[in-house]
Structure formats: C-alpha cells, structure tokens
Length: 331
View (cartoon, rainbow, N blue to C red):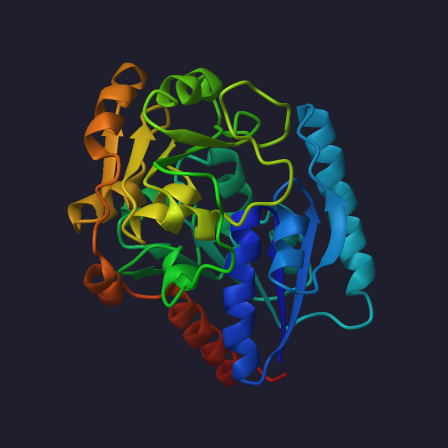
C-alpha cells in the first residue's frame, strides 16, 4: 500500500521518519514530503531520508501563508495526478488534509497542541483517524467538529524517536550546559511574546548557554549560537538543563532525564503536565522565577528509563490503523 506523510516542521520530520521506518518494515511504500523551513531540510538530510520538497514556509503575513498553502496543494495535486497514495498521515498538515480529502484518501492525523486552533479547524474535521495522547481531554478535540475516530495512547509523540535513542553527535560546548530554545513567535497560535534572548543572557551566570534560535543566527556576546544544524535530541541528552516554552525539545530532554523548565506563556500544555505527573523532570514557572529555579535544578539528571519504557509508542497505534485500512479497503 502507498502511504504519504507530509512534514511541515522539524518535529514532523522526526515523526515522519519514525513512522516511515515502521511502515516500510511492514511492506508499505512510503512517500515523504516537506516544505522549505529552517528546521525541515537540515534534519531530513541529517537523518538521511529522502523528502520531496514542496513549497515553503512563509509566515510574513496571513496572505503569504494562504498563498503558499494553496500553491502547495496544487503542487500535491500535480505530484499525485497519475498515482494517488492510499493513506495520508501528518501532524496537522493543512495542505495534505485538504488534498487527501478532495481525493478521497483516508487521513490519519496526530495532534498534541490543542491551542493550535486555526490548524485544527482545517484538519481535524477532515480526518478519519485522530491519534492523540490520552493527556489531551477528548472533549477538546471533539469541539473541532470531529467526525473521525479519536484514538488515544498512553504516551507522547516524542516517544516515537526517543525510545531506544542513541546520540548521533557529541557536542563540546562545555559544562555545565544549558540549552535555551527560542519561542516560535511566528506560529499562528502565538498571541503573547517573551524575550528568550534576555532570559538566556541571565542564565549565563550559571553556565554555558546554547541558544537555539528559530530564524536568525546572529552572534550575541555571552551566548553560544550555533550557525549550523544542531541535532536537538542529541543535545538534549547531553545538556544539564533545558529551558523553553514547552515545545518538542522540552519533552526530548525530560524523556532522557534532563531537567526541563517551561516558561509559562502558552495555554495549558496537557502533554507536559501529563509527563510531569508521571515523574519526568518537567517544571513550570513564570519568567521572573526562571533563574532561581534553574539554579536549583541545574545538573540534577534523572534516571527515567523505567518511566519511558512504560509509555506507549504512537507509531504502534499508527501502524495498527494503517493495517486496518489495508484490510477494509480494496487497493
């Protein structure tokens, strides 16, 4: 069976590669697509996966977002004009969902950010299967006019690539090492703002700070700002502390025992609260209290292998759904 996975961000690339490996082992043909984005192509190359590049990320304005989205959809139609896939999978790709729905292709969507309202309005109602952590209340997803089947799993998305993960690169940024991830201010759901540069500078009092910027790689005195690609999963396991607003690297760090501080700015992040309750080292605080909490947590690595082993891998769920579709459809 032919499977199509579309990746819009770096996280999606990691997720897609994990899914593709499993489905290929089951005999399925997997096509991977992505768009030009600061985090997608470097990671795809690093993971040695062949992604077809379709369109680009252009968040300059609502109009540029819309135009680029429509352009991608037309390009997808052209790519699959003669041979359409049998199943479409993504982590909320608006462009994929619209094209797959129009072509009558079953859609599997994964989701872990309930506050991404615009994306969910354009994807969840079109999805046949929605795979989400049990941490997310079902009623929140159902509010998006869901008609497909919601399938919960006892884990988080990042288990898909962190379980059995071995660092591929050893970084030499010195010790103690603090990793700060810039807030994704250009995301459509980003209503508030926070100066992560200023916060990172304050943290230099405690150790060496690697600042992972989203778009600009300018030099800032006192901060280590890598100019080239950084494997966040490898860096997270080598760090002594991770600081961010609760995105992917927060969970990559915590799942590997590195304490992770979430600077409270986004709405409720159910998956992070879920991991914290299970004993993973995730801690929330307001911006003014970050330095004090960081001083307390710095270097307190946790052994969480037994906790990680208990979490369910969403790739298992997605593979089961795919096999189910194979049995119910005549391809």
